[in-house]
Length: 122
Image (tube, rainbow, N blue to C red; front, top):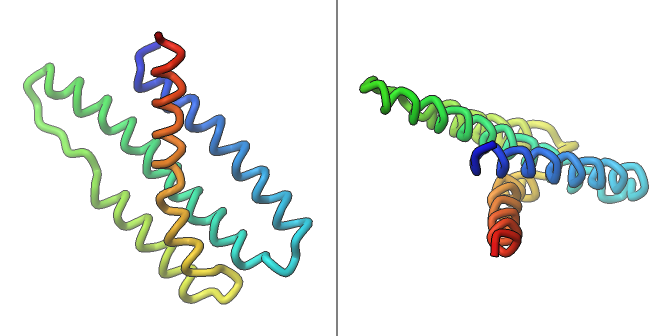
């Protein structure tokens, strides 16, 4: 298993645990439901974007080795982020600020995974 697949697998696992924890908080803390739902929405889209980028990076690398051109699919990832923010803006059940902030959650998770795996390698 290459390093990108290892990182992606760890990302999926940690993100699923985080989303399950957020779901438990959503059940236990009804007064913060809109805030937690924004975190769930933003983190889900952020995870989708990161997994999509990992898949496209693998396709881009394989195409480059064959001499073909491929795109990384930035428009899809940007559209997903804009879509979730617009949905949060239109629906009063989802907090917009927590949605925007949690769009960066997976980047922090990826940084943590990289640090942990770097220390494991030594």
